[in-house]
Length: 448
Ligand SMILES: Cc1cc2nc3c(=O)[nH]c(=O)nc-3n(C[C@H](O)[C@H](O)[C@H](O)COP(=O)(O)OP(=O)(O)OC[C@H]3O[C@@H](n4cnc5c(N)ncnc54)[C@H](O)[C@@H]3O)c2cc1C
Image (tube, rainbow, N blue to C red):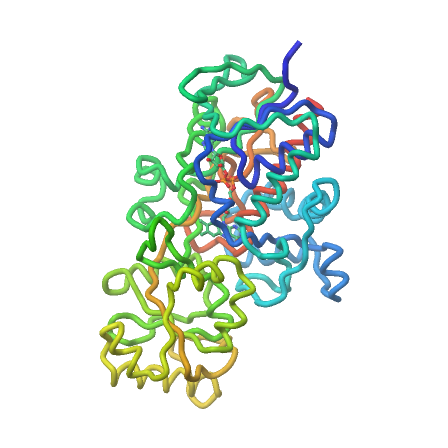
C-alpha cells in the first residue's frame, strides 16, 4: 500500500491549492517544497476569475466567454483552446473553494481597471498581496489532517513509473511513494540555460520571481515525454526598482498608470502609452537608454496605490521620494529640467483633452499635479508562461494527446494562458492558471 495518495512537488500558488483540493477529497497528501521563496509570495496576489459571486454582488456582469474573448483579443489564437476554456470555466469554482473549504477569504479588487480586462474581475485577500495570500494558504494546510507538509524538502527526481519521488532534506535523501504526482515547482525564470534556449529576450532582465523558479518540473515533464507549449512566453513587470534595498527589490505595482502616473526616460521624454499592458511595456522600457525610466505620480495616486501590498512594502522601504516641484525631480534624477517640464505640461494637456498624445494613451485618470512622487524603474522578468500541455483535469499530455499516467502539472510547469512571447500576458492570469489547474489537478489526482 502506498504511503500517500498524492505527492505535490512545490508549495507555491499551484501546489498549495492542489494539496488542499486533494485533501478535501479525502486523499493523503505529501506536499514537498524546497524552501526557496516562491513567485507566489512575491506576487501582487491578484487573480482573474470571471463570473464569481463577488462580481455579481458588485453588479458586474461577467462570464467565462467574456474572459476568453479578452484573452483572445490580447494574444490571438496562440493559447491552446482547451486550456483557456478550462481555466475560464474553472475559475469561479476555484475561488469558491479557496474562500470556502480552504477558508481563505476573498474579495473583488475594485481600485484599478486593469488593461486587458473588459470588466473588474481580479480577486484577492484582504491585504491584496501575494505574501499575505501565501501565508493564509499555508496556514490553511493545518485544517486538513491528511496533509503532510515538508518545507525544506527538495524533490530531485521522480521514482520510475511515476510512483513517487526522491527528495533531499537536511542533507539526507528520502523516497516517498504516491499514487499520483502533481508537478507544481514553478517556471524557469531563474534558469539561465532555459531562458537562453526558449526566451532569449528575457535573459538579461532582472528576475523578480522567486528563487525557486529553477525549471525543475519543466525539465522533468519534458524528459517524461510531455508536449511543451508556448515556451517563449513570459510575464514582464515594468514597475520594478533597479536597486536592491538590503535584499529586497522594491516594486511599485502595475496599478500606477491607471492612477495617472507618467513615465519618462533619461532624456526626460515619455516613450510609451503608460496604459498599455504591463507585460509588453517591459520590453519597451528595457529598450530605453540604460534600460531604465523614471515613473512620476501625484499624491492622489500615492494614497490609492497603497491598497496594493507590494506598493505598501515599497513605501515602508522608503523606495520612492516626494518632490514639491518638477525642478526637484529633474535635479534628483539628473534629467534635463526644461525637457521634463515640457513633457509633464504636455501630459497634463493630454489628460485635460487639450492635446493629442502621440503614443495614444487613453486612460489618464486626472492631470498630474504637485506634490509629486517618483522612482526609478526597470523592466523585469516576473514568471515564465510556457510549459507542459495538460488536459481539463491537468493531466500531462504527450504530443499524440495521450496522458502520461499518474502525472499532473499546474502553474509554471504547465503552459500558461498568455500565448507566445510577452505581449499576451494579462494581469491576474498567472495566478488564475496556477489556482485553477492546481484545484483541478488536486481533485483528479485524489481520485486517480
Ligand atoms: C513581481 C511579481 C508579481 C506578480 N503578480 C501577480 C499577480 O498579481 N497576479 C497574477 O496572476 N500573477 C502574478 N505573478 C505571477 C504569479 O506569481 C505566478 O504565475 C505564480 O506564482 C506561479 O505559481 P507556481 O505555483 O507555478 O510557482 P511558485 O509560486 O513559484 O511556486 C513554486 C514552488 O515550488 C518550489 N520548488 C521549486 N523547485 C522545487 C523542487 N525541486 N522541489 C520542491 N520544491 C520546489 C519553489 O521553491 C516554490 O515554493 C507575479 C509574479 C511576480 C514575479
